[in-house]
Amino acid sequence: MNPAGRAWSAADLAAVHRTIESYYSTRFRQFGATPLGVDWSCVATQEMRFVQLLKLCEIGADCSLNDLGCGYGALLALLARRHPASAIDYLGIELSAAMVRSARRRWRGQPGCRFVQGEACPRQADYSLASGIFNVQLDQPCDLWEAFIRTTLDGLAASSRRGFSVNFIAAPAGRAIEAGLYATTPGPWLGYCASRFDAAVELVTGYGLREFTLLVRLPRVA
Amino acid sequence: MGELINPHEIYLGTFFERFNMRFGPADPNAVSHWLSGGITEIAALQKEFEIFKTGRRFLESVALLGLGGDAVGPAKDRWIAYLEKLPKMKSDDAEQTGDARIVNALVANFLKGEPLPCFMQALDGRTVDPGHVIVSEGEPLFYLEPTKFLVISLPMRPKSAPGRG
Image (cartoon, rainbow over all chains, first blue to last red; front, side, top):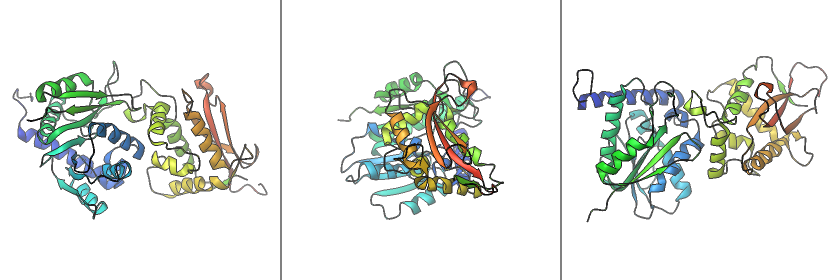
C-alpha cells in the first residue's frame, strides 16, 4: 500500500521503472559495457550468477530464451563459450536505451539474437532469466519495491513456457544490508512463485556469493 | 632490481587494497554486500571458472576479477604495466618466474579444502631478495593474528634510488 492507503498503481510502477532506467543509464555512462556498468564487481561474479540461472534450462538446438534486464548482453558471451553448438533464439530486454544500443552494436551479426527496450518480455520463450534486477532498490519504499518484484515475476511467468529463474541478495542474519539494496530470505519469494504459478521451485545457494537463485519450473500445459 | 616507482605513484596501494579485500577472510558481518564473500567467493569462482591456471598469466586472471582497477588513468596504466612485467621477473623459486610463482601458489592454495586468504604487499626491492617476487605463508597483519595468509610480495624500488639494482 502506498502512503495514501491504496494499492500501488501502474503509474507508481512506471515511476520505479524510470528510476531504474535512470540509475543504470548513469552507471553505463560512467563505466561503459563492463560489469561495473551494470553494477557487478567483475566478469567472474557476473558469469557465476548466469551459471546458476542457466541451471533451469535444457539448452538445445531450438531453445528460446528471454533475458530480462540484459544490460549489454553479457550472458551471450557465456552462452557462446558453454553452448557453442546451440542456436539459441535469444531476446534481451533492457530498460536503458543506451545499453540496448550498445548491446546491438556488440552483438551485431550474431544469429538468433535481438534486443529490445522495455520493462517486460514482449514474447513467450521457453525460458526467461533475470539477473540482479531486484537488488538495487535505491530509495523506493520497500512495499512498492516488492510490488515491483511481484509484477515482474508475474510477467516472467506469463512469458515463459517452461520456466524462469531469478536471483536475490540473501539478507544477512539479524542485521540490515547497506542502504539502497534489497535483500531478502528465500521463503517468501519461493512461496510466492510456487503458489501463484503452481510451479516447482528449486532454491540454489552455496555458490560463493551472498545471494540465492530461484529456478521456477512451470507446469506443463496440455 | 624491482620495478622503478615514480614519486607520484602513491595510488599503487589502492590496487593492493582491492586485491586484499577480495581475497581476504570472508566477513560474515560485512556492511558491503559486494565485499563480504572474500576468499570464499574467490574460491567458488576458481572452482567454477578455473580463473587461475598454470600457464595463464596473472594479469589475465585478475582482469577477470575486475582487479585491474576501476578508473582509467595513469595509476591503472602503471599497475597493468607492472603486472605485465611479472613473467620476466624472478621469484624466490629459481624454477619459476615471478608470474608463474604467484599463479602456481594460488592454484595450489585453492586446491586445499580451506584455502588461505591472500595478502598482497610491496617489498623493498633494494634490500630484501632484490627483485624477487616472494610468496610465503604467514601472518602479515599483526592485528589479525593468528589468521594465516598466503602472502604475495611484489618487489618495488623508488625510481630516484641511485646506483641500485
